[in-house]
Picture 1 (cartoon, rainbow, N blue to C red):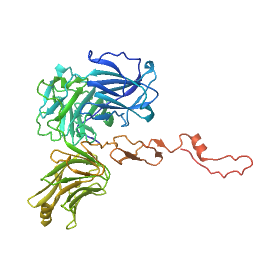
Picture 2: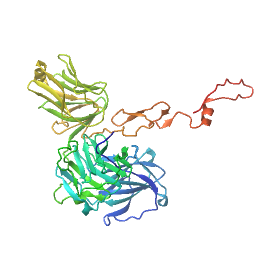
Picture 3: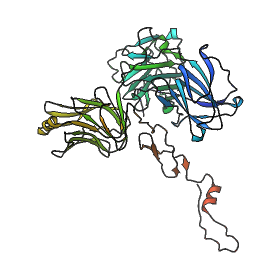
Picture 4: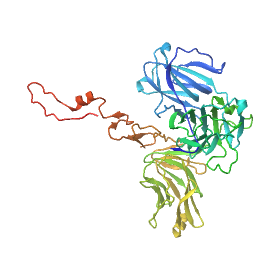
Length: 525
């Protein structure tokens, strides 16, 4: 969605080009290097800026996965959200190179077809060392002098931020005296770029879902005179055209990283940042290289206890204290979400999603039903926070800082005296700093210490105005409009030409000796 306010994100852009064979230099001796490996699992020993990839192997296709830290791999994606493909070559002289700009410490090439798995391979990597420390920012910002950094006014600009966090925050702030503005931030798991080229009418571009999941992500904002694009993890999330007469972006003499100047009128702009930053690059200038030495620690985030509940699974957590607080992101499927049980597993209180993906409450002892107010929906795939609490004779359910369900009276005292177990059962991911999810009793398909929810319904997943529906934690379905079909609604059921139409629909001629078929007039469009 595009608003007349801030924010733009952009990400990895990869192309296929041909290049002659690569010389192999020891990676420890130069900033940029070419290296050959004989395995599909490539350990680069340190974080590098990956430039190009090629593979010599029998004819085949590979998916590319990268890991920056913590052993978590993510798949490289094209601008349309589909997996990046690396095609093998038979000889080095005709190698087909995949060009990418992405930070990685390890690579994993996954064969698309199983018969490729045991084939001998040679993997060629062209990369440059990432010489900036990956840091943790803890609400303390720093400034970059634009003249010292060599940043000047431009008609074309690129901002790239590589980050991981669990929180809302601001990555970069620049507000020039002429009215030019550039702000990049994350709010409720979505990234925003706010920009103004001096027309005093700022615009906002946004994209992404659940980017506050603690994994590495990249936002890339690309301004090319009359065009602005936002990419997240390589996928084009949004694009627009600037308003006003001006197209040149002027910077303030100091750009603030991880904060902004105090301004009582900037209520929609975050004020600080907590999380890790691996790169903040503006017009090919790495702004993290100007961070003061010895102030910021290496990247480290609190390790949330996390679980994934699949279909038919549930997690039972013994009651120990209130408030019962956790975060969740669930599939858009109606059904039971949270149940409070007494020692004999009889239900005292139930929260469930209705067909509109709003929360409803049922207190079984009095058959009291209550739809959440305000009506908050949970079918967006984002992380939401929930607090279940009882105090002063009142039961409250708070979501994203707003009390949406409450209950009073004798039934609340009954629940408080008899509750013994909290049971979570909606399909999705859960995490908490305070609830001991690892020690919970699990039933059915439940995975501990990870979230396997893959957002398959990104911008442009379904073509030709098809609607994307996330059908499971790792799969989706495109609901196609008339005249289109296929996994991505990419196939037209209409004839591709008048000749094809007549061949497929009409029989105008009879075979000698057989009755002539009846014909009817038709019109091809």
